[in-house]
Image (cartoon, rainbow, N blue to C red; front, side):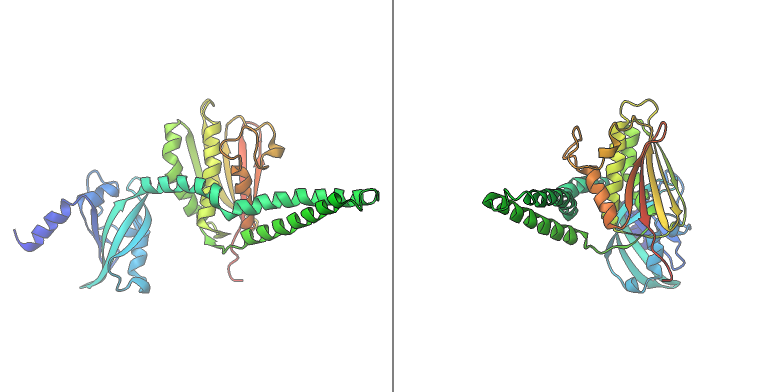
Length: 339
């Protein structure tokens, strides 16, 4: 066996996916593990454009930043042969070949790890995020402002104006107002980036899809192509989507023919995302976004914080309950191009 065949044999038997991409962006070689990861039980993706499966690698070929990259580690989303989304971790090396720049990629499927990471990320967000502090401070500010008005009204009676406890109460209320305003401003100051809602929803589908199937919940996904980018950050928006879909999943446990529908479209300079289910709905919709709801799971802050997150992006989160349907509507301002 000559050296080339021996190397090919070793690569083919590797439990880790290995593929090479030629200068035209086509998959030149894929071992058995890589073929399986891309959804090939038989046949091969060799000769097909890599952008069909993992678009990031095609962009690598045209990027000056990775022109001479060696052993660059990336996380990349992709689609299998049947259209199923997945996430991979890849070590990418580029080199110059007879037909131009080429890539050698060593990759593994980390879809399950991503699901676990994002699920735990929601719990971490609810316990540690500064957004919680800002949102709670906002409610505290409202209460303190109301109490401050009552305090001033009592002063008109004159009988308590000289009382030391009364004066101390005024000082406490003033301090609470200042503190809550400061916390709210701090929590709102975060950089926002142009984000693809479609890509975040694709990631949501990959994460939540298996658990919906496990509970026998059908899911419809209607995402318009070429949606404009929005002013948001990836982590915060994904956590809101996860919280809303997990709430729907819980509400549908005893519902006949349970179904979730996710739609996204552009409307009047906004990207609108509707997350609907055919569950029983809520009995007190007017209190839905108030913190510490009676009967809520965990801390009772999920919807309260979700709305706070969307508002930091300049958007809004609503709840509607048309006949036979419960719907959360997220409106996010689109990034204005050419401005």
